[in-house]
Length: 603
Ligand code: GTP
Ligand code: SPV
Ligand code: MN
Image 1 (cartoon, rainbow, N blue to C red):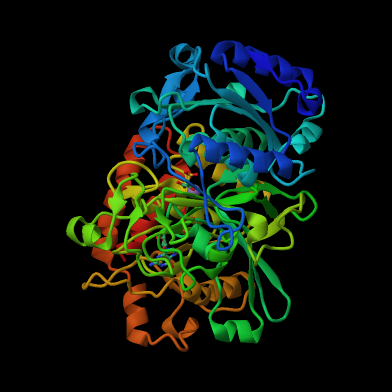
Image 2 (image 1 turned 135 degrees about the vertical axis):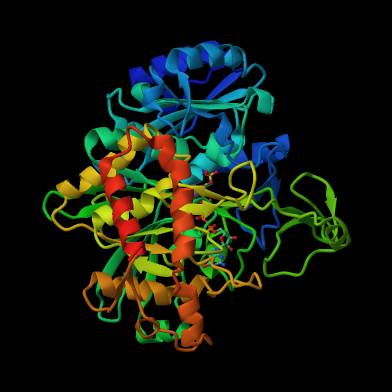
């Protein structure tokens, strides 16, 4: 084994050096490369990746600085059944997580790491989650034998020497060990050790399983720390809506995976809003950390990430022009279709992009794809969970406070799911306690972001079901408890962009037109909009929503906002699927809220 001694090694403190040495003794890489985060290093990694067949360089006129990558076709989404919270007792993981005892997990995985990097390079990837200098910012160090992971971490986090600076001579960093091994699902485990601030991931090179700063650190480990230290780590977007008056309203929204966070966070308002002077800017599209600002007593938020790992299919200049611009340079495309252009250079294609399907391409499985094959077999060129990895700095509507360590004050929290039936377009919780109940009982149809069945309603508390790093009952209690630490708490809302009519068509146009719903939400927060009291919460009447130019009649809006008591009774029963699992430890506030809802529906 050769250990490169470069400037980055010297910059790492002795705790880091000792830990890296120990892990290298287990994994036995041929070479250790300490990353510093420079552009030169990045270019060299991409070049190496092209030589190794990890990347295909795209046509640089069309896609400057962009590369294509295909992960193993058995490894294209998060694997929730192979994701574990590893604590001394099962109670630490709670009823919704897979649990392994920490001792057992170390004992099971350690032999798999033994010699796993023989013949390979171990990249030492120092990174910060959170803006530099933020009191909440966390340092992680990921050791990985994947070059794809190394460059992706460079986009998704503040990666390189900055992390050593933030860490100083401290020992407080998340120890992230990652090896793809032979990418065999039988030897795939994503294990979290919250008490040890450690993550061991093995057997997968897919984003959520392998970019350990993201779901593993910034949600699972961070949610555990947040519960202990009175802050919150949530699966939310963060955006700013600026009114023509200059008034800024910051909004955080929790939608489950592939349910519209990226799209909502980059929303382009309908033309009349733009003309009037409305502006939407993005702080984050996936993860938010929130704490109570001592001076104002308000909830403040940061986005711990530095890039977007967004769903590609369906993204085009009509649905999300800002995302198209964000991925137009220095980005990575994973598991989309690969097209060879007449001059031999490469292009990418995906379903519902701006361009006509190519005569042929290589699909996400590495097979030939043609429109003819697609017609016959339904095969997709791009996997439904294919993703782009883009620096957030590319976003034309990046908010001016996106890198502000002090964060922004949050006025509204929105929960939303993908529900073709029952759940109306928008309503507001009566108060924080009711809002927490709405979040806790959030239901959504499953998507391709995780392996398993797609399209079945499952309960996904706060869109965090796969990401709560500890016991869900304590997590819900933490949400209730946070109320007491705030002087002025955000208003809580529920939305559903995905309700369908009897013909199976979306009843709401969605995307940019979600601005109309957002406008009502903002006006509610600022004390300007009307709402009627209904059994499920405060609701706008048709005349309270701006429908101008939409082509929807007030009757259409009544249909999309309708609440059917019978259907809601079934909804309550379906919530039991989750609540029974939590029984015994369930916070009593949830039980009370449920009883109140039942009594309102029974009126
Ligand atoms: P993760 O990155 O997995 O956490 O997902 P996300 O919540 O950021 O989801 P994203 O914004 O990428 O949306 C995923 C899917 O939802 C895409 O297929 C979009 O086309 C679709 N979508 C987003 N917004 C809307 C909307 O307003 N209406 C409809 N009908 N579909 C939408
Ligand atoms: C999600 O699945 O919620 C994502 C993609 O945002 S991943 O990073 O893979 O988790
Ligand atoms: Mn996500």
